[in-house]
Length: 544
Image 1 (spheres, rainbow, N blue to C red):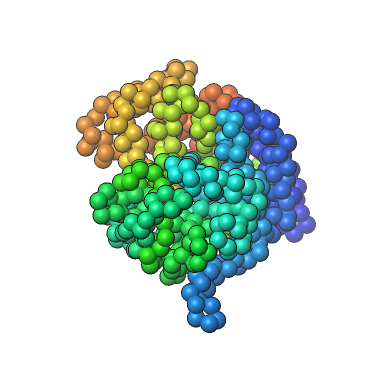
Image 2: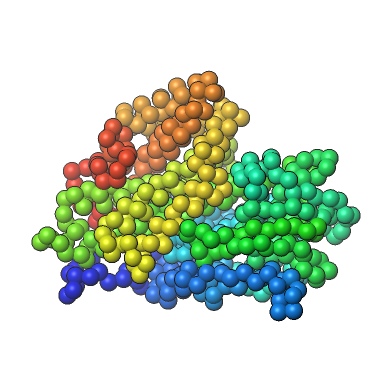
């Protein structure tokens, strides 16, 4: 894959297969017993890496959505218009199963198959992943209202993308978004002020009129949203608020403006005001926060998956560039300092992939040990993979030098995308505190997860000492442990990654990961250590 070009400028990486060139992903799919999906994943891998898809992803971000609040005759329409490339990417995500595969296919292994598709899609165009993953995550929540679920199920499980702005009954497929945070509270949703007033009962159950606002409402052109609002008697409840009322009239959800975001530019995020908007309750009254937290657990999995995708794409771009760029008498990929950096990046990418794909597989399991792992490791994996992606993408950009810092190259958009997953569905501190809440809620489960880790870590003394430290930290007083929430979560994530690498990676990669990650000098700067005197061997195995 090494070759010099006449002007020493590296050609665009295109027309390659994201699945067949990713050994770690292929192994994860096989471990998740999802090889039945392999032919489809190979097709998707070629589709995602094709020049046509790369151009569509580029255009979807180059021509961002536009808000039109009123018609030419002054009527309120609240329409967001998208470039056709956006709909190309949304249709691709939909037919590839990213909006519903674990629910349209009841095999437990469908979660691993789904994880692979989400991981690949995020490498190419991340904005379309937002409404797609929210749609998938809403399916079990909507099921809490059986009448509503029966009505929407065919459209939620459809593999078509229907971009038309029509009442629900006229759509072939639908997307569903979320409306939780408000300007005065952010993550503190208990301070929300949006009110829901009962207005009767209909075919979908208890009906309400919602009045208030949402500071982040994604994505506004979804066909419906799950919204958090308060009733007078029972506190916060969850409501399904469609874009169109059942009678075919426009629901008064007024889009105030679209957010001018740092990244994720292809997707529309908005601020909205509800003016007695129609909604129906989903889930038990007064249990809205708990209901939407369950939905958030699914979207947090997707944050971990897509951030692992960012790492993979950054690594692949860096490898492609250094194998084709000649400097100081050798290709960059042949130079010692660069090999150490790239090998360290390869370890980071593989460990992130293993962690996210292992978590996805456990979402298909009902085993109590897997459920305990999910409760503890979902926020930890979301925290760690998302955090690592931010610095990693900056490092990958730097590999390109000045060529990485121009919008005509591949790294600018990837770099801007990376921070969103750390913020969306709970910032870093929120994730770390959720890890501690899981510990406090079920300490026996937490020790059970450490038992799982210890069984693997017994093979490596350095790793076993990390498990013992985690056990000691679990015994700290809550107020002491809270101050160390990030330290504890980092140690938990790294230990889990190391154990999974021991189980599922090559001996060379697992040993290098443990040697580097628990080296006292590792951490602040990527490339300090790759944990091996032979980094080129890691690189040969990283990208087939």
